[in-house]
Length: 171
Image (cartoon, rainbow, N blue to C red; front, top):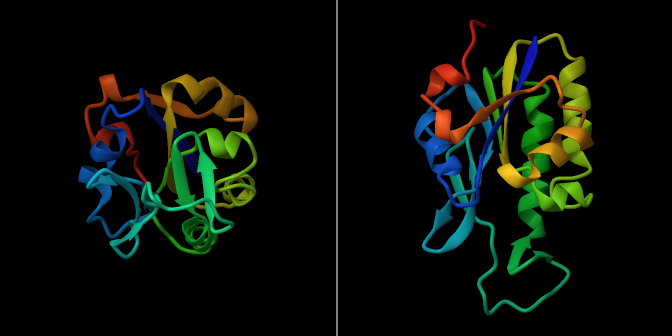
């Protein structure tokens, strides 16, 4: 059975850092985290420990290879990499699938969309045992739950987070 957990807290409160310490070296985990490295957002592929630049540097001009949201500009090629990871997760056997983060872009139909929505429908239809962990900013939690029909998901607040046991179940 697929279990969906939403890991939530305010912006820049340590959500990604907490997950990186738990999942970066696990062999039973796929997905991606988006840590800040030297002041810029990066993309960390959990299945092969690959760290790629995600956020364009401030001096980068707007172009069709970038997706803008607020003050951030992200590389479109990384969203494509995320789509590949999500598709591969549907045909592989992992205990954990981590997606950092589901946010404003996805709610607007951009970012990891439309693949993320298709991934959720497909993973829920599979007869597999895994835990999908979604990182969501606290102020977007209700919108994400409504948009993706996640009322059955377990919400875990960073403030109450005790470690891996909060995500684990016997599989």
